[in-house]
Picture 1 (spheres, rainbow, N blue to C red):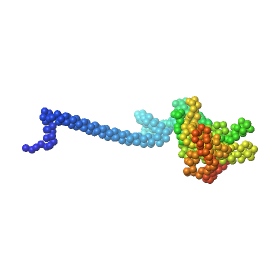
Picture 2 (cartoon, rainbow, N blue to C red):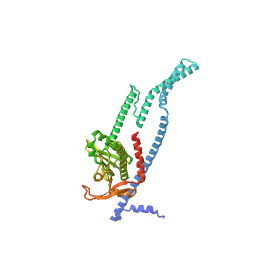
Picture 3 (cartoon, one colour):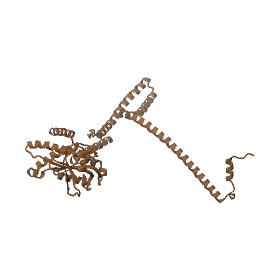
Picture 4 (cartoon, helix red, strand yellow):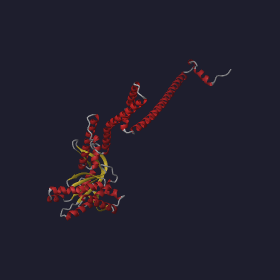
Length: 422
């Protein structure tokens, strides 16, 4: 007699009475059965997941194809001028009306020629009426569309057309919006006069989320002070002092802009410039020193013209320092000011006080950072004690950044003065 396959022999052994098995064998068998059932459940779950994923992929693919087809149809549709699209909307009632007229005329035993004449006459009449109706509706829509496009380009002109219907109300709303945007643009220009344009734009961009804590940055601060300002003020009227400061500060702001700096504030006869604060600048140290040299050269040329006119000459002393600073909108909730603060800023102010007329003072760290990659010429190296600093500070007086930079600055001064004279 043939033996059954091993598979059936195993199943037969599985059906062996429980009494003939030991306790260990029974517990092992129960564990095996539970494991098998769990494995079967996991397999079924994986199959179900794969089926659902395939269905989702098919649905997504169908939706993408449908969306692509709809977008293509919409693109073709909106490429047609709007007046013709509106005219097409009346095509169905036109055809329906012509069919009814033709049917009624046929019931009256009109001849074929008369029917054709009535059909074409009505077609031309209704087509003309529909075309002019569509023009009447679409012309203000075109004006609204053009006005919105012009607003996006910065042209805030008003829409001249006046209507009493819903389109007229929409035109009035757009005109009010245009006035509001024009007012906002004027305020931005005025704000740009009180603040550096880069800072003004930064503040406007952060109106919805003003950061009162500020941010830590690596930047360079420059303080420029007019030597002998007090004695000069005693010999000038307030109007003359104001005219002098406005003239020189205007030139200094142009120098800062030339080297990507921002005017932080004007403090009496002192101007504070910052490099790398409002906008990130990897060369903020170089740009600060170059700006200081440009300011000194420009001051010398302006002094020559003032001395020819019998006016007072102006002499600058400048202190520069770089390092970590806290930059942002600082102050109270009622009054804010964008500025930078920190020990690095204070040291720049102290270096300005240590400088003499026509000097540009930097400290050792700034000197080492610049001399690695630039032609930096300095003199009067010395170590001084700064009030408020425990350790002495090694300082240098900067005289040049090389012939190439000097030539570029001379060209800029000639161009600036020519623009001012014009």
